[in-house]
Image (cartoon, rainbow, N blue to C red; front, side, top):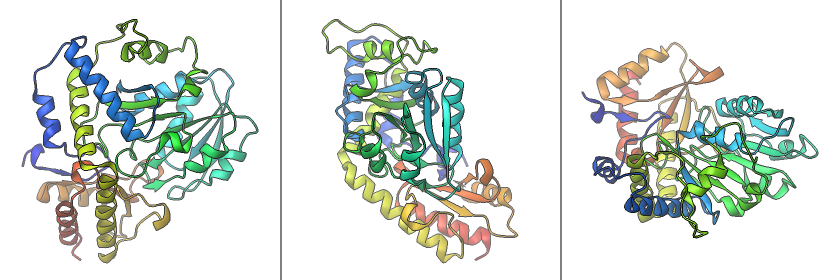
Length: 362
């Protein structure tokens, strides 16, 4: 069985849409070719629609979601800035690490892994933080953290949100929620291979951008001049953009917008509910309570007496289905089952449930 025959239902890359595959296989244009720049502009416009924002600075960063996280901190953190970070999983932990490396005085607000973070605790953690940062959809636990209350109560702070696993799968509304900086990834609910990090930054945040951040490559002062020709002064070359990946993202966003953002969210919700109900019917225990459970990423406790790695290997070897292992402190304790992007289809859910029933002997 080849890789193309596998059903990837882990937290990593979802199977790409046929339109995305065709875009990747198309002719490669030069990164300053007018035709590519038109595709880039259209991609930025499509990202604004999916992020639900009017932010002029909205672009696909060359790099995965971790590059988006790095850019979000390196461009807005100054030495000793108080930065409040919500931590209830691996990626909240990573935010703390990145912010600390860029000189922030990090104030951690923690919740149990598998539990959401109380927005009031984040807002009360410091009297005047420079940044409040939180993961919207925590990929390591399958928890959805509330964002809207943070936007309405943030005061002078910038609100920075990781939307890597939420964009295109559940509701995202950057402007209405008062989000100042948000980044995502292509390989989750957008159904595009990994390699780009969609990023959007509000004018309010750009007023506070670090004039000369420590990273040249992720310097938004420079990147904004490459993607933005609104001043009429032309674009300024920054780096060689990954043209094939931008074309793939352009296609993936087109598929999503043709389906309709709300329709795609309903599809993710229906498949997620079907999957979660089916797992419970097999006698499996889910980590997260229903009110804050993600439909696109389900964490399942590994049953007592079941060999975690052996079960995942058997699913892959005999059924061509890949599910994710637990991450961080949940390693060996849970499975992470992705149902996102192109993978979020009823037939895939039934295929997984049938395979799990046989592998577990239930």
